[in-house]
Image 1 (cartoon, helix red, strand yellow):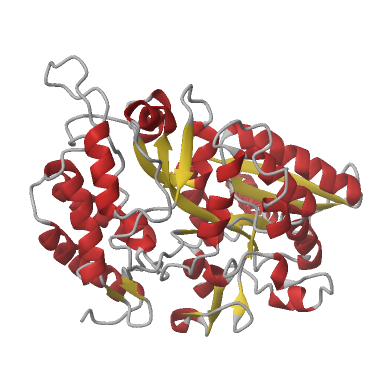
Image 2 (image 1 turned 180 degrees about the horizontal axis):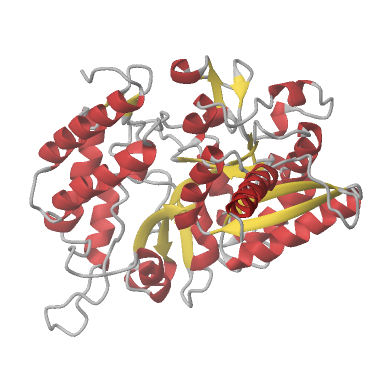
Length: 448
């Protein structure tokens, strides 16, 4: 067959590939069979969330008969690699789920739209309908490398928040009742947690192996956030792990293992979520989204605010939310905004409330009977604890570009501290050194 024919075929295939890549995320694509405008939407999630998402999208399509939406649900482990590839190849979906940990990276690169023009043109939007500070993680001023965090209304908004979550102290009520211990409450300090955990750490058969641990979960970040510790100076692009409050939180977590002996040592392999469900752990710190998983437990359990180091401390909310963004390459952003509004609106919020995966960002829906409907734990009487925590001042922002790399390095170094191979002071010093180098590379300047 002639050589020129092969060249033509290769050129045609290359052109088709480029068209396919450009069309994957294009709002301008139309379904050839129906003539409807096609939107693409992607999010991370588990199989249970996929079904509810598809039901929501089906409702959106019924209410917007001229729009068809293609849904893609990806696991968290694969999601950010997928989005990185999609933005590099200009094939990002029109609407996608965004984490505050990654928003600066994508906003500074120009991959997502500013949504403030849509909000300003929407007479139904009222910021008082939402939890305070719920949008701040996605607000910025400036451009590119000069992007700086802002509060809502004082800059651009690159994603519309759909939920507003926090971390909590979970405790096994059956275990507390068996020992006649008072349940944790908002007055608890770290000393109170340790005192209860010591009584709840039990070797039932006397064989030298702990059967029930008083506490499990080395979430230093939750303890640090609860006391308002600042892990990073965003403006100066500098790590603050060696600051007194951050060091205090890391030291407390190491002490839970070796000083107080209420937390399983690293050689005891446990999964905190399953261990709390099965009763291996009497207490743990975890996000509010764990309510769904913990509801499988045969034990009665409750929730309380994360303790602070002293009673004089102001308690801060350890948490935040995820949001929906619109690709900057979207040709029909008005239709994409309709989808975002729907997903973060009444129908989407009520579905989220019933799922137990997150706290809806709209206060009236979060505080309605829809939230955790069908869940028998925690007791309904303790649900206000969640809203009390969310009403606390937000913990200092701790996200910057390079999040994936610096969290990996931080985890590796802290693992040495959890194994008692280095001191918390040394761990925090090494983390500062590593993060400063990463930030210097990300923001193209010399590390201090």
